[in-house]
Length: 372
Image 1: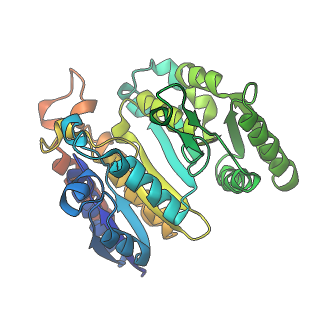
Image 2: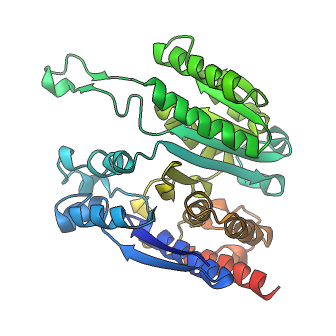
């Protein structure tokens, strides 16, 4: 039995709805394996600004500091509501990026999984999917353009702007070790993505990745892909990258969303934002808060539940428990159930389920594992 504390940041839009289903599944895992998870709820995001005057209030920082891990829902409200928030209090700039920096969550894990039996989820033709997609995308999360020096156009009469794309050797080395170790756990293959043909940052990145490979991981098969070619190849033959794909921050932000499109829904994209040395991090869906469908009960909670599975594995080292959650998720699909965005014209009406119903089905699968 393990005992862990978790900060729960429900977020905005569909965040509270899908978080409820993630917590329901976490409780089922707790019952199945005899673990004890204590939860502390805290405000975070746009709603936190309106209720507490800041999207990442001090009370939330204290809760995040003292808990073992963080479950986070998506953040952001409608364009109208967001326009009422000052730029220096934006949920992204004043909450999300500071959360990453506070815990140095430099490694972002985004599993892209689509077994061939669910090929009809994807907008790609089945022949494009090979034997199915099983890619772990690892994105460096606290360097590059998003964290570099910035010069705003508003400071110089909108004549120019600067987003410095800076990486330090130590930043590249540590994410390289994370990616190579994950590659060893999987199929011994690592795809390194960069823009080394044009960008100095890309040449630094590639140089260090190859140094680390030669010195520490000679048994891993390493291949380099230019980022624009990667965007093309992900559409025409994604399964060739089954294994681990390593990306810098901005390029990873873009290509991991493209991967969600290949799956057919960002609702199938959980993620882990982790400091592997401390085991501390936050776990969240890769998609946005979708305020236009909030409260309608149609959001797909797969990504939130999958993020729970990633927390169990990456933060708590509970590998069997994590695999139980993944198995339950795909068992629900295997039984023909679909959330609204995944339904097809021939999907039976009684197989189209709400957010809550999907969570209940996953929980039921985990409970059946217990009885077996």
